[in-house]
Image (cartoon, rainbow, N blue to C red; front, side, top):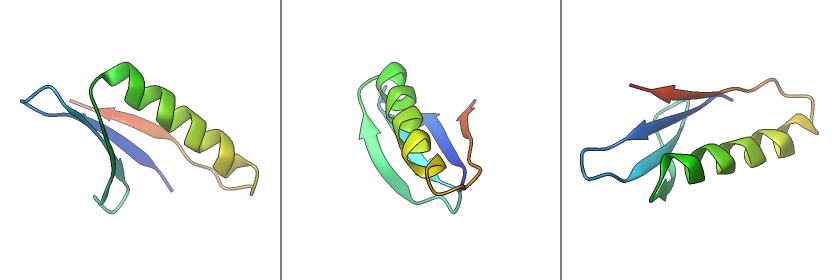
Length: 56
């Protein structure tokens, strides 16, 4: 599964699944990237290939 990070106009940051479901909301881009990295590390234990993309 791929993950997407999207900054919103109200300065919150969403972590989204590849089907567009909101997984979490953060107050900073850094927090979202850290969380996504942690999630990817956990998922890699099962052999899944995933990436995290920051959307414009």
